Length: 305
Ligand SMILES: [Zn+2]
Image (cartoon, rainbow, N blue to C red; front, side, top):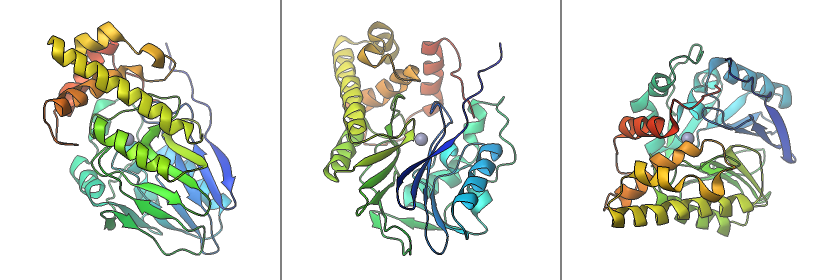
């Protein structure tokens, strides 16, 4: 059986000089990006997983905005958001949270090991040159934006891109849309707090890291999912059940409509660790949790990169 071909990426105009670059269907490895135009070129938010997808994004940005991509923001370290960095490194200053930059250097091409059959193309790991800790406001002649790190959530080093005048939020993988949230490398409790702080910004448009663009309702949907994970973990721990037993017994429940439902298993692993005293984004055995997820799912999930 051949895998279905994903629909082509498309641009969503959110405001003057503000676009989301949406790659359907938003499942594993298929992320979104953002493009902020301006008189001296573009700021790009995230790249893509494979050389082919990054080249397509490169062509789209340069067709949409004259001039160079002067700034590239990585919302976090994961390869689907950062593997295309090298294509922009000649023209762009690459910026990320300090923890994300360290993870990019440390993890290298590890993601490719999970899906060795994907045609990744030539990927050169390119860590950011500029990092920040809590907040950074890059100089720009385009739409004003700020980078905020609001605590560990999806990973230890998440950054959101917030446009205060336009009320547009590029949330990275702190927000998924129509796709199951994933906090194995971050924190369930932390992600819930970050979602509260994102809600307080009162965004009009929310660009998720994966899936269709929406509004603030996406923040509530992600929070509802994560609260269920916490409740299941609490009950499972009290009963002495393993995350795999809990995931099998409970299933996706009201979230059955989301893609990549197998993430319930790794999310439970993180929730268990946290309820047992592990710090937020404390290192866990990620390959072991991934292996348990494959067991739960009955096979390796599809990566449409
Ligand atoms: Zn991610």
